[in-house]
Image (cartoon, rainbow, N blue to C red; front, top):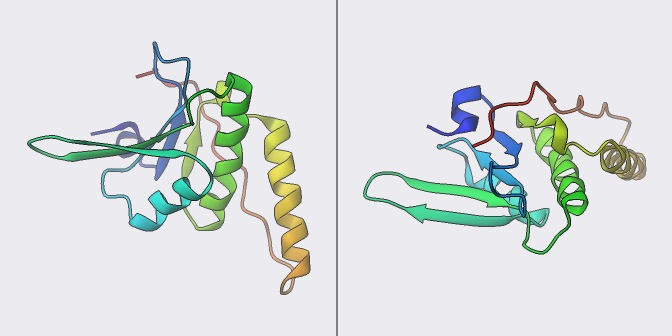
Amino acid sequence: MNAADENGTDAEIYRKTGHPDRLHIVSRADAPEELLDLLDAVGLERLREETDGPVYTWHETPEGLSQEAQRQLATRAILPLLVAGYNVNIDPDEFDVTAWAQAMQAHRASQSRTAGPSQPPPPPAVGPTRPRR
Protein backbone atom coordinates (compact mmCIF):
# COMPACT_ATOMS: atom_id res chain seq x y z
CA MET A 1 0.00 0.00 0.00
CA ASN A 2 1.33 3.45 -0.85
CA ALA A 3 0.72 6.92 0.67
CA ALA A 4 -2.22 7.71 -1.64
CA ASP A 5 -3.92 4.43 -0.77
CA GLU A 6 -3.23 4.93 2.95
CA ASN A 7 -4.61 8.49 2.94
CA GLY A 8 -7.59 7.88 0.64
CA THR A 9 -6.37 10.37 -1.96
CA ASP A 10 -5.76 10.06 -5.69
CA ALA A 11 -2.26 11.56 -5.44
CA GLU A 12 0.21 12.49 -2.72
CA ILE A 13 3.08 14.91 -3.31
CA TYR A 14 6.05 14.83 -0.95
CA ARG A 15 9.83 14.66 -0.77
CA LYS A 16 11.15 11.25 0.18
CA THR A 17 13.61 11.19 3.03
CA GLY A 18 17.13 11.10 1.69
CA HIS A 19 16.06 12.20 -1.82
CA PRO A 20 16.33 16.00 -1.86
CA ASP A 21 16.89 16.08 -5.62
CA ARG A 22 13.29 15.23 -6.65
CA LEU A 23 9.70 15.44 -5.46
CA HIS A 24 7.79 12.17 -5.36
CA ILE A 25 4.19 12.04 -6.63
CA VAL A 26 2.47 8.77 -5.85
CA SER A 27 -0.99 7.93 -7.14
CA ARG A 28 -3.28 5.28 -5.75
CA ALA A 29 -2.54 1.71 -6.79
CA ASP A 30 -5.62 1.48 -9.02
CA ALA A 31 -5.13 4.93 -10.57
CA PRO A 32 -6.87 5.37 -13.92
CA GLU A 33 -4.70 6.02 -16.95
CA GLU A 34 -6.30 9.48 -17.23
CA LEU A 35 -4.76 10.49 -13.90
CA LEU A 36 -1.34 9.19 -14.90
CA ASP A 37 -1.62 10.95 -18.26
CA LEU A 38 -2.45 14.26 -16.54
CA LEU A 39 0.67 13.92 -14.41
CA ASP A 40 2.70 13.20 -17.56
CA ALA A 41 1.17 16.19 -19.35
CA VAL A 42 2.28 18.70 -16.72
CA GLY A 43 5.91 17.66 -17.08
CA LEU A 44 6.35 15.05 -14.38
CA GLU A 45 8.32 11.90 -15.18
CA ARG A 46 6.47 8.59 -14.93
CA LEU A 47 8.48 5.77 -13.38
CA ARG A 48 7.55 2.14 -13.05
CA GLU A 49 8.87 -0.88 -11.20
CA GLU A 50 7.63 -4.36 -11.94
CA THR A 51 7.82 -6.97 -9.21
CA ASP A 52 6.69 -10.57 -8.93
CA GLY A 53 3.55 -9.12 -7.38
CA PRO A 54 2.24 -5.65 -8.11
CA VAL A 55 3.55 -3.12 -10.60
CA TYR A 56 4.45 0.16 -8.92
CA THR A 57 3.92 3.39 -10.86
CA TRP A 58 4.78 6.87 -9.61
CA HIS A 59 5.94 10.24 -10.89
CA GLU A 60 8.86 12.48 -9.97
CA THR A 61 9.96 15.95 -10.85
CA PRO A 62 12.56 15.95 -13.63
CA GLU A 63 16.18 15.64 -12.67
CA GLY A 64 18.23 18.81 -12.45
CA LEU A 65 15.53 21.19 -11.18
CA SER A 66 16.22 23.31 -8.13
CA GLN A 67 14.04 22.60 -5.10
CA GLU A 68 12.17 25.84 -5.80
CA ALA A 69 11.48 24.80 -9.42
CA GLN A 70 10.36 21.37 -8.18
CA ARG A 71 7.87 22.98 -5.79
CA GLN A 72 6.56 25.27 -8.53
CA LEU A 73 6.10 22.39 -10.98
CA ALA A 74 4.40 20.16 -8.44
CA THR A 75 2.11 22.97 -7.23
CA ARG A 76 1.08 23.86 -10.79
CA ALA A 77 0.37 20.18 -11.45
CA ILE A 78 -2.34 20.17 -8.78
CA LEU A 79 -4.85 22.41 -10.57
CA PRO A 80 -5.49 20.18 -13.62
CA LEU A 81 -5.95 17.24 -11.24
CA LEU A 82 -8.50 19.12 -9.13
CA VAL A 83 -10.35 20.35 -12.22
CA ALA A 84 -10.59 16.71 -13.36
CA GLY A 85 -12.10 15.79 -9.97
CA TYR A 86 -9.11 14.12 -8.33
CA ASN A 87 -8.27 14.42 -4.63
CA VAL A 88 -4.68 15.61 -4.15
CA ASN A 89 -2.60 16.20 -1.04
CA ILE A 90 0.74 18.03 -0.98
CA ASP A 91 3.21 18.30 1.86
CA PRO A 92 2.87 21.91 3.10
CA ASP A 93 6.66 22.32 2.90
CA GLU A 94 6.45 21.64 -0.85
CA PHE A 95 3.50 23.92 -1.67
CA ASP A 96 4.39 27.14 -3.52
CA VAL A 97 1.74 29.81 -2.92
CA THR A 98 2.95 32.00 -5.79
CA ALA A 99 2.86 29.12 -8.28
CA TRP A 100 -0.67 28.27 -7.08
CA ALA A 101 -1.82 31.87 -7.55
CA GLN A 102 -0.32 31.95 -11.05
CA ALA A 103 -1.99 28.65 -11.97
CA MET A 104 -5.35 29.94 -10.68
CA GLN A 105 -4.97 33.21 -12.59
CA ALA A 106 -4.21 31.33 -15.82
CA HIS A 107 -7.17 29.00 -15.19
CA ARG A 108 -9.55 31.89 -14.60
CA ALA A 109 -8.31 33.66 -17.74
CA SER A 110 -8.86 30.53 -19.83
CA GLN A 111 -12.32 30.06 -18.32
CA SER A 112 -13.34 33.62 -19.17
CA ARG A 113 -12.36 33.06 -22.81
CA THR A 114 -14.49 29.90 -23.05
CA ALA A 115 -18.07 29.17 -22.05
CA GLY A 116 -19.83 30.80 -19.13
CA PRO A 117 -18.47 31.35 -15.66
CA SER A 118 -17.48 28.41 -13.54
CA GLN A 119 -16.27 28.00 -10.02
CA PRO A 120 -12.59 27.14 -9.65
CA PRO A 121 -11.81 24.07 -7.58
CA PRO A 122 -10.99 24.50 -3.92
CA PRO A 123 -7.30 24.75 -3.02
CA PRO A 124 -5.46 21.47 -2.51
CA ALA A 125 -5.32 19.82 0.86
CA VAL A 126 -2.22 21.05 2.59
CA GLY A 127 -2.31 18.86 5.64
CA PRO A 128 0.06 18.22 8.47
CA THR A 129 3.47 17.08 7.42
CA ARG A 130 3.42 13.33 6.92
CA PRO A 131 6.33 11.08 7.72
CA ARG A 132 8.58 11.20 4.70
CA ARG A 133 9.08 7.91 2.96
